Length: 455
Image 1 (cartoon, rainbow, N blue to C red):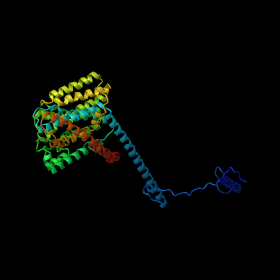
Image 2: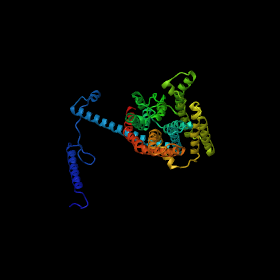
Image 3: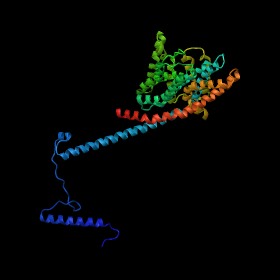
Image 4: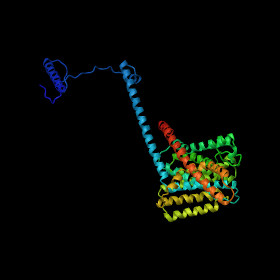
């Protein structure tokens, strides 16, 4: 009679072990019988396999069963290696995404730099607004120092590249992919739109004519002479600064293999040597003359600020911060329109302005302006799209409003700036941001996985 709280299988197993133990005891009394284990059950001995040599084991020779087992073990090891490879790639991707979030946080947490991005973009827009004023009958002077917004962008670019790559392992390939995904898609789209306007309505764009090589060079970030203006500039005219940016990215990516001091020194040497050579010899023309502009050293100035900031420097207080900004603005307004060399007349004032902003950041004296911060987010879209929008604004204004008079031009300025900022925000939220996210999801994982596999 079984107890109700006991499993019948347990009792059946106990009876079998008891019968096995009795059989073992009878065998021992007769001097024969199977060997018994610790619990009285029979020990089943597997048949001995013939030994094979190490070379035969490596080659898979021997019994068919042995060869099959060897292949299975190889398959198992291969699966394990694949799993480990996927795990390593997954860890690399996780670290990559975490680094990407850190980079974005490091760049966006500097509120003063976001504000300067917005101000620099607005300076360039105001500079080009003067062309629209001239077409509406204005013949007076226009502040050329507003072009210093480009120099502020260059200093900020060197600063951000330094901050987002400092003390973080990154290959040159990964860096190039990140920058190309960030810069190229929107520029290519707006360049294609400009080319389409040239073909459909040539009279709408007066700053450039359609030329095959000029268009190809514009898409490839290669300097090319605009046959209308005679200047080295692409189809989308603000893109001339991107030619400088791309050269800086190439040099900076090559320097990533070195530590911070050597990275800064190598970039200064590679970017500054052609400039010094040209200044010393006076030789060079065309593309070479374009790349020997002293504006290239403004990226190095930004890198210096990034190096100082990450080392805990620029703790000079609020008064010094505001003093640097005011002195930089005054110097830019005075020297920026006199036609001097770009680095001393615009680059150094831009350096002072950005240094003052970082000093205020250290002193925690930067107010929070959401609208200006948002415009800083959209500054790249604003910078690239504003020529198209300003030209369209002028065409709309000509067909609907009286053109003559200062008040009419001031009203046009309000209309054009409002339309330009609204179009830039739509471009940022509808094109730039989605494109960047999509390409980061689709292309960056492939690049990272290949980089991990090659290493």
